[in-house]
Length: 466
Ligand code: FAD
Image (cartoon, rainbow, N blue to C red; front, side, top):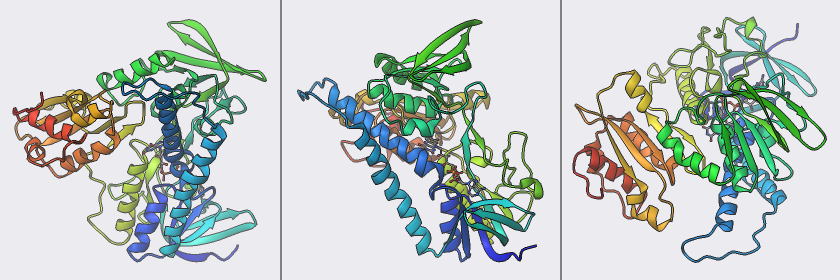
């Protein structure tokens, strides 16, 4: 057979898992080769987190510009040049970030190979490129191949049946959009189009959308969505879809009764399956669970000691910051750091819905299921000066602290900048800080972050603003 070329650390996939692992491994002295079959930056930068947040921003601006304000701003004849919004999203937002990542990889002397990698055995990968293929023998490998949308056989992707990638690049704003799956991705994209005037219908199998966030958090989002023409059907089973030249009709079942809904497009967002089925793992001793998750130790090591796995293909939530965190652990472990362990106490999660939802550490459900003895304090943004001056008072902050020690165990935020505010609380949880530590930290005035201090003061029994 062909002679294999020797490489040091090979990383398969360049998403937030792979590219971060590559940079960190290079910083720690490894000679790194990264293989990417598609675009540098993976799902997150190209067709996930970043372009979705760009369109969410467009939706917010459009809605603001077309809504009545209490402060006398009058706008007339607001129009949106959608093709300009699309090209801004792609050429400015996405391309700035992906070319930035390419620059960083170059700076760290990471070899980039464009091609599709499959394992031949525990020591070699075969890379198929446009113009041939190459065999590489590695000292260490990090698998970071990510995930792809699940396809429902009775509603195959194509034309008017689209996945999240299709929903991010529609040529026209649809009049009516049907979404199967009211998880974070379906709800975020539904929110974008609802803000742009589309009539959105979400069909969800569970009895609630936005699974992972509790009812109290979701309620303001749902109320707002419905007020903007959105419809949510829960406990519904999507059956099949039929498309014509200009629309698509979904059949679904609720309470044993068949229903139908017709729209311009049908977005299927029912979860993501792992890219572990076609990378030759059967030629290795790497072990998978039935769902295709790669089994890893706390240092991200698979059952083959010199092969690691990170990101969406490991157990737990499929989040970019989880992938990056694990990438740094794997890079450190390969460099001989015996302390490198994925032992976090809090993994924040955010939904970029109309009112942002953020959670970290324990939540109402885990408090119950783990029988934790906690104190729960809640402060509304309606009592926060900055929120009032921003005309953005919907939502609240909730702190969950240990009843005996006051250590912060968990936190949830609904409302303005929840996605940014949650980090302070993750920092507190990771470092065993108490609600008193938060109360005694001076927060600048007037800020949304003061509401965190107010919630902590409430937990300590010495509230000022409530
Ligand atoms: P990926 O980003 O999936 O990257 C894997 C890469 O590996 C891909 O580029 C792929 O082409 C490549 N690859 C696969 N197989 C091979 C092979 N055999 N050879 C070579 N290359 C290969 N997460 C958040 O935390 N926040 C958000 O706001 C957020 N929003 C999202 C919005 C949408 C619409 C979607 C779809 C996802 C969103 N996510 C979000 C999830 C986030 O994108 C993923 O958790 C993250 O991208 C996972 O990173 P990863 O490195 O594991 O894999």
